[in-house]
Image (tube, rainbow, N blue to C red; front, top):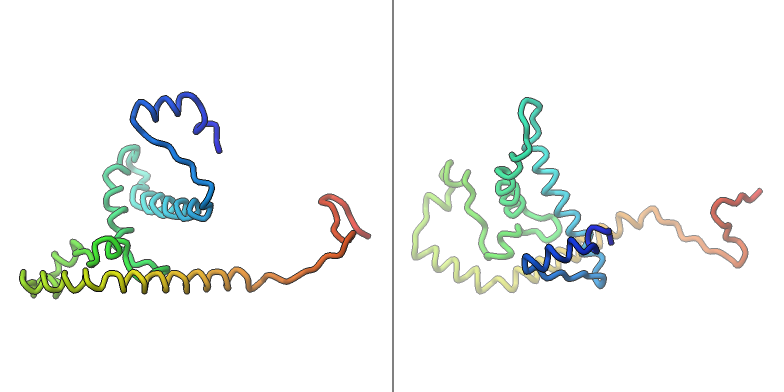
Length: 168
């Protein structure tokens, strides 16, 4: 852990702002997921704000909500659903749907929408299980992809060379 998270200034800041700090070493894979998500946000912001003609010191503040919205409404290959759907059990109505008159906008009826919403709520658990199964399958595919070039090697006592030594 870096010194920026162990110094007195950091802890004073957290205490002054009523921030509880918890470090998780039990789930190191989660840190990778967070890093991946942060990387996607940063990459999206960089591609939206880069402009040689203007300074973009504060432009990222205007673009961040659009980037987050885009990531929340983008279907995940790992689970087969959008994060928005996993939270609200319905797909988001995008601004382009409104602007170009998508079917679900053109034929919207309040009563039918209420019934459809109830059906979505009732089947939410099934969809979450399906997402969990899709995620497990996705992890197996990734594991298979990474393991395909691994060759099994066995070592006997005395065969392992220390780094920096040569065997001739």
